[in-house]
Length: 195
Image 1 (cartoon, helix red, strand yellow):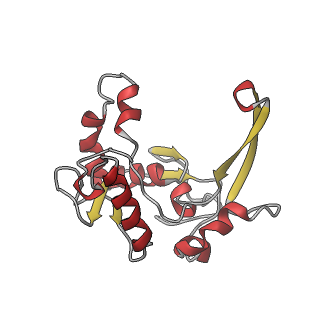
Image 2: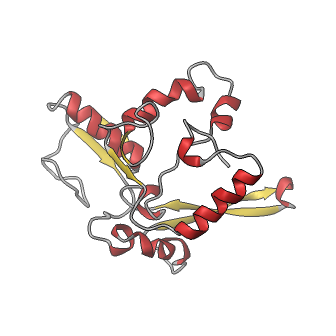
């Protein structure tokens, strides 16, 4: 009975697993559970709309519409206002939250970025360092691009590539300028090093 439904079918009386949120993580967890035990009945609950054939999702060029479409209601985004904070001069920040199947990955220009080593290591939690998390990140991705199999996965559910477009001239100028101040060439990065 797999599929995308706007309402739970009347014939569905119970499920084995309920996953709250149909973002990247929720969808990957559902797929992994389903692969591990095809007999499991899995329900992924997502408040947002289906992203199938949505031109602002399948065409990364249109990603800006997902952020700037402030019409009410925005079909792909919900905006929450935070509390006034002293660290922001007593201003309240606006927090955009995805509202679509696929989560933030559906509306962020299909950009994939790993966290920085410094951030993970700063947690100072056993099992959560950059080196300890690397095997899980590799398991998540199928990477098409330059890089080492030591740092990138080749059989995960997320298809990752450098894409076919990039401001090459600007990138090359930036890399050249970075080299003049002693920063390494990004193509030699092992993992989680940021410029």
